[in-house]
Image (cartoon, rainbow over all chains, first blue to last red; front, side):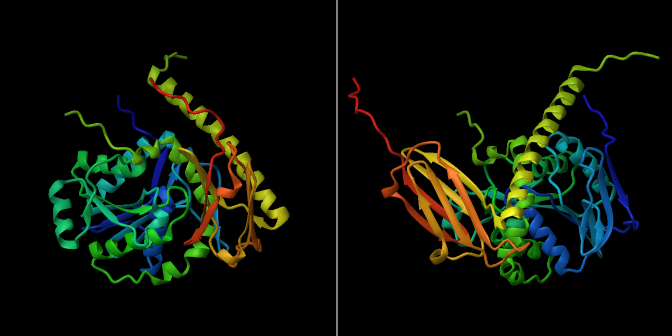
Length: 253
Length: 136
């Protein structure tokens, strides 16, 4: 049974018009890799806040930075690049309807590509100096093309839980080119090193120059600043069974 | 006024949300206590994890901005205590402090520790008492 979910409102403060959009999203999850990477990209490119997403069931709080009041889930733009950033994890119970509503809006923008950024939990992360990056695409041909163009390893077997998985699923169902870029990461410690590897590949996809050195240099401070968001994200990850990402899907011979 | 019965899936969804709200309340209370303790004592409670693997326990704590020489790590049969300075204080909290009770007894003489990329890892052997039984 399908029900439209009226608890999500997407507001364009400045009308987002144009075509050929590439949209990146960095909702908080494993190692906050997507959040760190997407925020870094928006900051370095000087992207401008052009809209927000209001969710009825989110707690009644506002975010204040340098005396400025910010929406919790914000949409940024520069030319035909859009970025969706969130200061809060999406509660497990609304991940599905939220993803559908967000994808309705994304679909209305007729994007060229939706890029989800995330970490993939790696129990041995402490022994890995340069995290591996994986790509998963909504279409095999799209994945193959990016794999050949960028030498990025394909994500072959496993589970993707939470909002990243739902956006990919909606991408497949609606025929919207969607890719997931994930890097090996600590499960529940903020991981700027992993985010830096994600940024390297995103810059290749977007065909822009992005130096990740400032990100790595501020890693210590970032980890400390983000530990409260990480604590809150942990429970959301339990709710969407993120631990499944450590498992392999069943295969019946 | 017309009365329409809620479909079963809707009842389940509402129940799921109610449980989520309750969990969220408990979590919020936990985080409030952590943050208040941090504020009162000027110490950071690092994010940490404890795993049991075979006859070992593995403990990790995320403590960026410290150094292995400055970490004061103390281990007893049933606890791990860590104190260390932090060189990137966010709100003036200048050191890490953490005391964790262990779910099983360990052999304190077996403990190995390392500090890499801001993460402290402590590995200890469980103290196992018992008899070896021959399997037939």
